[in-house]
Structure formats: C-alpha cells, structure tokens
Length: 254
Picture 1 (cartoon, rainbow, N blue to C red):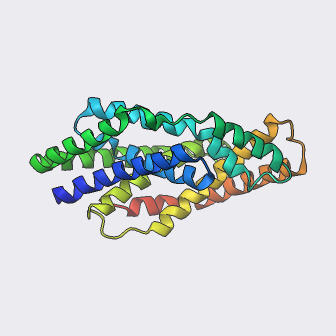
Picture 2: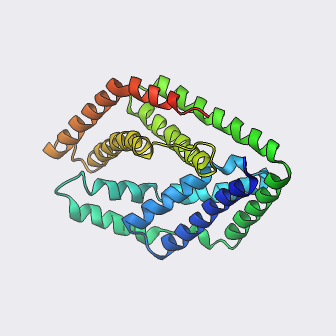
C-alpha cells in the first residue's frame, strides 16, 4: 500500500465534498443536489479511516446533517419523472424546499475540520502504514458483513428491507471505489456496480412515489396504481435476481 496515494485519495474526497458544498450553497437544482449527495456519501464511506476520531466525528455529524436536510428535495426531484399530471404541485413543493434550504457549509469550522483531518490522516499513514492498512481492512470486513446481513434479510414483500439493503450497498460501493482508487483493486466493474444500485434505487423511488400519492390523497388514481404495480414488479424481479447479486458481491474479494 502506497501511503502518499492513500492520503491523496482521502484528500480528494474532502476537496470534492467542499467543491460540491459550495455549489450546493449557490443553487439547489437536481444535478447539483445529486452531485453533492454523491460527494457526501463518498466522504462518509471513508470517515472511519481518519485517525483523529473525535475530530472526524464532529465533521461527520455536519456532513450527515447536510444530507438529511436534502432528503425531501431529492425525493421530489425523483418524483418528477414518475408522478405524471401533477407537475405544478411538485414544482411548488420543490421551490418550497429550495427556499427552506439552509447551507450547512457556512459554518466556519467545517472546512477547517475537514482539512485538519486530512493532514492528520496523511501524517498517520506516512508513519503508521501498517496500522492504517489494518484499519482499512477492518472497515472493509465490517461493511461487507453488513451488506451480507441486509441481503439475507431482504424480503420482496417488505420494501423497508430493500431500502436497508440499498443503504448498505451504497456504503459498500463507495468504499470499494476507494480501494480501487488507491490501487488495492486493479479491476472494478463500474457498470455492474451501478446497475444494482440503480435497480434498488428504482424500487425506493417507487415507494417514495406511492407515499407521496397517499399523502396527497391520490392513492386511488390510475397513476398511483401504476406506480404500485411497478414497485411490485421491481421487487419481485430483484428477489428473482438475488442469487446473481450474491454471486457478484462474493466475487469482489480483497
């Protein structure tokens, strides 16, 4: 494991997050929101690798808070392609969420916290490479085990179990990408990684759409019934394909 390359990969995640945060503070359109959320997830996936746990815990809380603040806006963006015939209502809610957005990144200490963590990580990796390698491997086993537990618990008739699987899979994927970036996994099938996440994302989006329709007392409309039918179809399809998903996960050995 090359220490400089590892430290650079960690700092790149910090830099990418801060860039996307500044963009998010300036505008809250769908593309900017999506990029900011990815940068946040990428950073949170490597949070356990930073040696100063007290400092890292402080910025982790701020990053997670920023993500939670955007949950509703992200869901409304996803609904635009699924809930037809209610564009005006959706846009009104989207504008309301954008107006209510309060940039978490304007807290003066966030950038300092992140960059201080990056410098401490660089120093730790340079002087304690083996200890960092053990920390990384422990985190890999933990994330891999969590994904296995969620996959075992996945039930096509219980959408929440598939949502839990999706969350665990995203953490797994982003840590896997980090391993690839530092040269520990030379080959990575990005297309297949993305295809499984997209499938689980479509299932969750269908559930969000059904909940939104019910919230607005539209659950008995043809659109709502079509959304529910799509959700059932996607859930059944995933359960049918679950052995292939299991095989794919098991093939990613480090």
